[in-house]
Length: 276
Length: 276
Image (cartoon, rainbow over all chains, first blue to last red; front, top):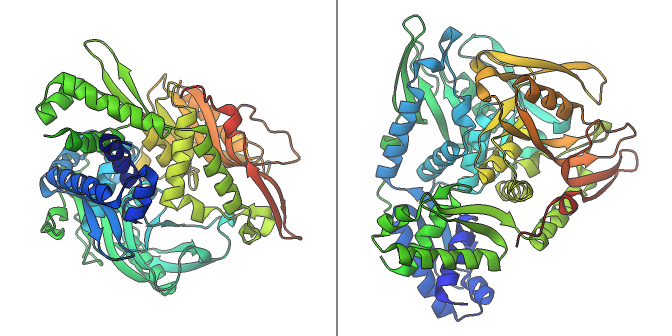
């Protein structure tokens, strides 16, 4: 097979398997060429991704070595995504009774989801993450997108577990909005002990839901590796969660004046850009 | 930029934007080369995808023409995915009280989800689809995966809509399992009239939930373009839904004997393979 064809297939193969170590002999056998040719091919892929700030091809040396494609977008691309997303959310038609913000179209748009997933995966690209966790319902597409780019499983916490979950472990937590005690639960077999868990959600007000998930992570003898939300809102109450990543910051929602103020969140500041 | 680099970037660009028409001048400008070179590049991409039965690059002629990457896997690849998936589900540890089957790990595995999404998108690759619809909770990762490969938005029907959905339209339907009247609802602003909707779900027994979603599609003055489920189960009752795509067929679940029988569903038979 010619180099040109190998490059197309290799790129497509790697992109479909992020964060996965692929041994050089695998490619050498797939294309029936010498390992030295594969090394040259991979150098071209690496260089091209780096040039477009569109991912990292990490080379792992040694007998058990190979290459690993790491989704990672550059700061400028990330900034563009965040500015466009802010503009999209900064729309008075999204204001719902009670000062809530309609986001379902954004969480149902595959191109937007892909961008969001890639951004969050960029920020945690070099952290050790074993699983992504979210709570139903609107966090699910977000968790699926992040899970895809980090290539680790995601688990869905339920407000009220269905019979199809089997045995569960549950926790109680104080909902930030209602101040009421709520319950959330997760299938017992869904998380291995000692997993490092990245918690994601669509919306954070006081942080009650995230706190509930943190408790649940502990109940499974696991560890919180990080927290990321699509939107944070400023509320008069103190946030119970201190260290989190936010893509969007909803500064104000005024129902009477039909006014909403939206900016990018702390994402650019919280992400390490010294990689490229 | 050299051809080798162009091929890497082009492949990655196209794969991130399935079912999207990209004009040739866009690439010519991106790489600062003649349109004739771009045509040669694209011929290599097209040929390589076809050779590996790993997607179709459709060329659209004319002034407003360009190329479109269509995710489409070959019959043999699809068969492998289905056989492996059957084996994974054919595990007595998955049997839950009441004869239910634990699937959450499969719906939370990004590589499996990607394969499932690509398969369903293959089957509907040349249908006109404007949106994917599912009902919470476990159908959501599935809908997200299909939506990604078809590159159309997905909408989530709720059992009980939250305030964050705004105004909704609801329908009542008869649940196959309980024979009780249930309710499901969808945000009014989530579907445009006259959309062609692909309904997906994780599990079909009698088909009550799918019937409910069909009713909802009609209430939005839309049309059902197709229905696809991850698993169908054989039940004594007549299925109310006749025309559907199933990836997996759960023939029997015997709780006492801890026995489960699983095969590939009707997918291979229902998909048109004459494309390659």
